[in-house]
Amino acid sequence: MSQFDQDEVFSPIDTQPTVPSRLKELNASLPMGVNFHLESVFPKTTGWGWKKSFKTRLKYIENTKEILQDSLHEGEEVLYISKGTRYSFLEYYFMGLWAMMINHTVFVLTNLRLVMIHSNSKGKPKKTLWMIYYSQIDKFKGTWNGMLNLKLKDGKKLSFTGFPKADRKTMPVIFQEALDRYRESGFNPETSQSLENLCTHCKDKVPKNEHDCDNCGATYWKPSELAWRSFIFPSWGDFLMGHTTIAILEMFGGIMTWMAFVVLLISGIQTSSPEDIIAAFVVVGIAHGIDAAITAHIAGKGLHPKKGPSQFETETAV
Ligand SMILES: [Zn+2]
Image 1 (cartoon, rainbow, N blue to C red):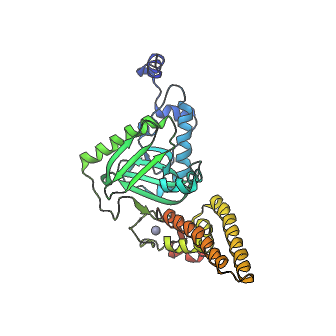
Image 2: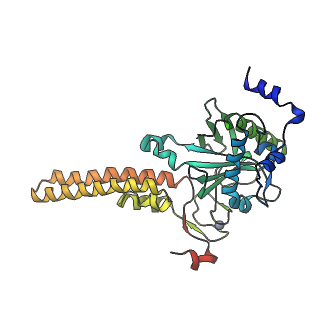
Image 3: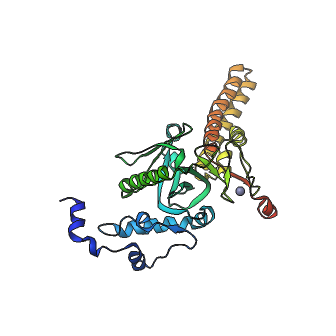
């Protein structure tokens, strides 16, 4: 007998608990000022694991409630919330599992768009935010192993993995419903790129290739600004992006390469062998060059705050 059959047998439709009754049971409340489509935000009200499923979602909602309150428009309704990890082949290639650490993303599907919030492994938001209008999604596919693949209108491809097991089935369904609904409505707002950056502070759109928010005056690091810092000293760019754990590891790498540089340089000068001097520059050039390239790549994926909104400049400027 499958899980589905068991659910049917033990919880006939007419006695199934509702989302509000379950929330009451858990003594939980939802934040003010945000609309939730309860049946899809909490798809599992019964059967094995409903409590865990509720609690996980309530935690994501609690953690992101300020962002949701600030960023959702009037009439916008949350259809679904979950957390996954953005997958990038390049990052896995160079960073291995460390890439997971910087790619946790809270997903919020609304009736208008997909809002993505960069987070830590527990779903606590960090500073980078994105959104994708459904009209910018060309193809969407959920795979058997829980990967979510998006092909966007401007050709960009995004892959996500690491969703809770329970979400692997429900999320694609809710996503597809949201896409279908948008197709009926024909809602197609103007965008500068399919995956649009949102301002950390005011949640307004910051258009492609721009690093200043026109709305609130906040500024963001340009990938090149972070890349040359990482070239001079690996980890500098990652510290500025708030990837502290990875930055500390890189820092040790940076100390090693600079030490190798000094040792080779001194020995080259002492023995007057140009090979050692060349080797010193090649070692640093290659090692730090790779670090700078990866930093630029990661930095280019979203906005990383440099200076807060201009009206609060005296408070936030360091
Ligand atoms: Zn702003």
